[in-house]
Image (cartoon, rainbow, N blue to C red; front, side, top):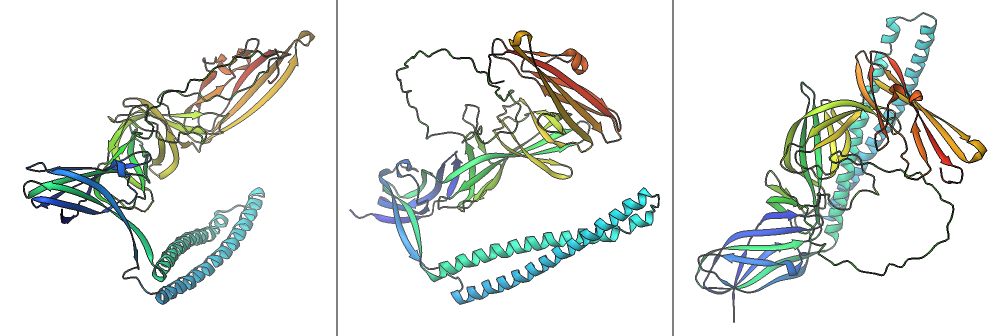
Length: 515
């Protein structure tokens, strides 16, 4: 039985992007005659999963769908409207010549910068010598201004040249790709969806085509802007970073970001025999283990070994929709799509952890005021001066508090020194190790600063190993919490220096090895 062929253009309307795939929904109106018709929709992704193809047709009368299939074909074409090979070679040679000129100018700038650096170094050495002999004048200091100004101009020109050279390199790669395409045939894989239907009554019908494609994924990203003022507030913008190389462009689509994992499925656990063995008793060996302590809602940096491969959604499927209709081309590049924004008041404080870093960091504590959770992901930190760093957060539920660090305070200096003394007990049956840490703090600014210094002591999980914080050796007789952390609140006046001390002992039997 012959069927009438109807070539229709059904555009992509909605895409649900998951961790490693995407569900595409095409929707469009079609005018169908009565009888048997074959609907063909070209331009679908060639890599779509055939078993996920679903077609629905709605109208005044419900038509009967006899068959649906994906038809793929290879097409060998030459690049249309592209310049010939000789013209491309001429353009590439011109780019190489221009790049060589820029490289020569860059080398000249490097030589000029070296000379200016040497002159400035000699001038500063002479200035230091004159200051030591009491012959310093303001004119000597002003004499260095032209050199410094010229050095800044030279650095600015170097940045401009580097950017121009990068643009030329990109243009050259594009021309080389066009040259390769123009010199040989281009094999392209195309696909179309064909639907055989029987229409009872001619008229307008709505065709919906759904399918799943691989080569698409997304990850959450954030931009946190700290705004100073009474009170300070945090403006947090959530983005979805999308990559897709499916072979079809998504133009003006509604984009939804989901953490659903359809590939996991459900499998029963494998039951195996648990065989017990006896072992000869050996001397106990004690190991010092570094254990990361997590607190609910407090995000932090995650090492590569601890980072999950997918998206941490807190165990519940999360679906987020983009704020606007977007375009996502099939180029494999990242595209940042805005999802939502939230503003919340922040509590600012200075925190120093000398064991991890010799600096005092500005910490902001705020509440997730959005109705959506914050998924684990990287955060760009922005202040009034611009981008100040990049951090990350863990999963944060709605109305949950979380922290962010906005870099070190340049006016606070931190230094940490540790002394360790080990002594044997009576008859050598026990060993006592005394550790004493001194944290020196300096305020180089002209304002009063208050900061929290966090230190830690080991926590014993082995009988026979005793750890005690010596109050006489510890500033303020501070005691650790159940996790071994001690917190010292310090107020530093203008240009003031303070020293904090922490002392603790580790006592263990001599037969215990590993400490």
